[in-house]
Image (cartoon, rainbow, N blue to C red):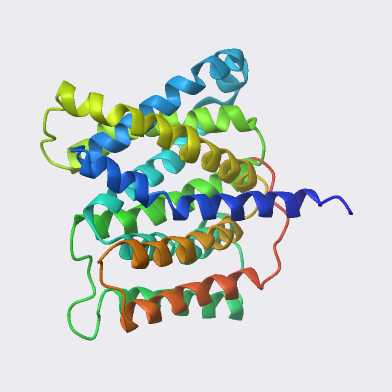
Length: 302
């Protein structure tokens, strides 16, 4: 069996993480059923993950210091984008959350043009059109003004934009930080985002009483250990070695896994409209990945 090339291994890593993320909505919904508001559920997951990675971060403190503010900003963008996505899973339908988040190829292509000067090819333009049409279908543009219908929709849409920028920064800086350092910053900087932005966005968050915290603690620990940490390591390790647009495409396995599992396990509506929107957004991804992937530029976007 021939060894995988570094690019193929990175692609496989991101694709596998997409499958894991596709099931992430299940423990999030269980945390909601345990009485945790969306903001607090996300804060606890980030806090547990950051604490678990603390010893590894201490051993790499020189590397983290060398990364400077640029590495912190990347952590805030990637961790913050995922925080809004996690909250959206408890605030709107699973399918809508996943579809709106996975407009990342659209945002990745636009940001690549604005920041890196990447050319908008015919295939990329077709991908943009297909993704935007998918967005309009999901938002029922034929029946109403195509705007987010609730806070969860808005969080999911914003999460995709923020994550696209964060993954573009990972691509530009390449593997300047080791995977453990990148993952630690994802959760540590993301925790700061949760406390400063996500909780206030939820309004006046209810006090987290001891009984609810104690009841949810085992599920939080299992979610972090079995799903969040492995998926994050796979995602960030691969994202540092691939273009932002390609990362967005490879993560689209989450659409199939998440939407299908939600349709089977919940009573959320998923009919012809949602199927059309899914196909259009997946088509955007397939068109994007069919283009050639240029080598990553050297570190710059501090």
